View (cartoon, chains in turn yellow, brown):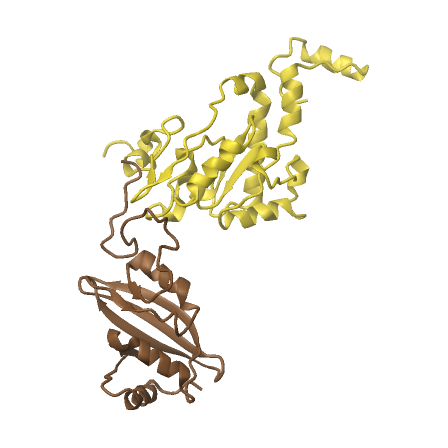
Length: 216
Length: 151
């Protein structure tokens, strides 16, 4: 059994009881065991990261080992949105709309440099500098593109998060629909959703200064 | 085998009176006004049969001009590519559409219009193809200033 924060019974006693065929757990522990081992991703890819995501689902890497092999072709049946690739400004409203259509509880993995920050297109005119400007992200994966091993690592980290969360608390603080940005004359409007993102999170030169280096 | 570009130049000039072509690093520079007749002649010519437009692109050379580049091949004669270039002033980028000659030019001309603002006259459906309809400006022009997403 996974971490079980609410369990009032001593670990040793529980283990003894288990040997006798008596299993003790909490509601959260049971729910989290179930939902963390059956995370169904949504079946959509945006760029080359999607190829690595497909490789993760195929026999060599086999994402089914972690219970996530059922890529759903409908947001209504998916728990996890893997943002696999470059989010262009033209695509961003559709990504947010798909996220809105997913049922609670729902999670987001930002896969690769593009989805996280714009990646090599950071200084371009047509790419969103990170999908976290419009939707909340649970796990970021580095890489360009990340290997299937990295994606599996990201999934395992998401599962670790889920095992320590409380489902009722998560559902209670749900936000409902997130703002879908509109096409403007130069870019998207608004430029970000203040509910999930603030400018201090931007990868600007000032924010990227290495504090360890100290003053000269 | 691809005929030498000088031969194509001579052939065109003999068929189209009043036409003057120049050759720059293997490319034929065509005056904008005569582009359509040059293209039709190359496509219909028994000798060259350039029946396939393999590529159409634009390039920005500020401050004065934008070039449209055409690469032509022949499926019938198995030769190509022949490069045509049209030089347009940046402030008036109108040029004839070659969609009536090669149907495959439609989307490529829309892309050049979308990103460089080249106005292809006679195009059946000239609107943006990559950027959204509400977008303003031509982002691949070198003087385009894109928005600051962090502002």
